[in-house]
Image: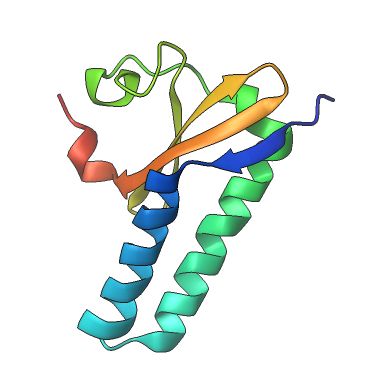
Length: 101
């Protein structure tokens, strides 16, 4: 089984920080924030072995991140990523509801 190296874009890092802030500060749920962010990182970690098992997206809102952009959902968030040789680049982490056409 192919093993991929994981990288995150600065936008994806920013998305995670904003999500953490929103749940922690706005929703006043520090424990939920910690668990939710941990779950996102776990899903990203799983991509190191399962990245190519998800199909290339057909949605324009996903494909703007690359012609081979894919997505995997964690709860209500979509993790958008691209595969380049042995590297998985996490492009964005956005609400899945934003990806409708």
